[in-house]
Image 1: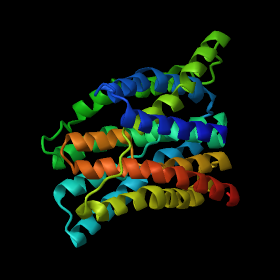
Image 2 (image 1 turned 30 degrees about the vertical axis):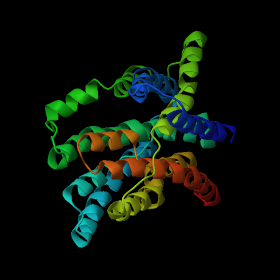
Image 3 (image 1 turned 60 degrees about the vertical axis):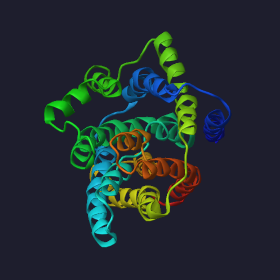
Image 4 (image 1 turned 30 degrees about the horizontal axis):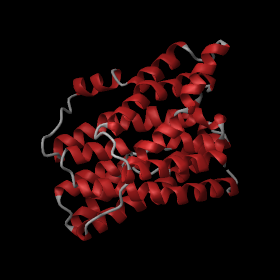
Length: 309
């Protein structure tokens, strides 16, 4: 639980820095690049070789895609009945299915489940959520965005193979499974990985915002309910049905549901804002979602410990 308080402290530092300090406009961008190009690959390279790949890893892979299909149907239904404009529909198709499974998910998983839960969180983030971001986001932006985006398979493939965490994932799965690193390399990767929580939580605090216009309150409530309640419930139902078939253990089930309970991905919100997809809704979904998740995630952890999984 000490790690949980560290997470809260660095979010608070980010909020205070945004309010009282004059930081460069691109400070969040450069911190984000540092995480993507150095810290996240280090976490993957250190944690994933410890995972013995079996059918149980299918749970964290399938869960994000199942929730995306559910989200697509739900957005179409609510948009038709409540007459949500196209930009709101496009924003929701980014904000709801794409979760903050690395910046928030990794530190939270380590805080509540320890190092043993990290490999499952990485699979959920990279193979499940990461592929969802690479494939679905360009299609949504091309269809709903003001400027559009290249949604061709060539463009999607190029983004995948040049994304450092995905490269680290492929290298680990192909060449490093079961490899024991020398002490100096393991220590280096560990130190880099420990920077994940402070950097990620600080950048989240810098971007935290909860303001929303009256006409966007309905879509915002929909997004928050889907992310923080419906997504983990759906993941739990999937695990209850599929875990015996896949031979998944209790830890794999708990981490899958816990990662599904993460709030909106910051990157997805930024992409939506850049494309003109209800920017105020995107900002509010990130800000309020993160704030509420600091309450809901511990509750989900307690529920998962209580359930006989």
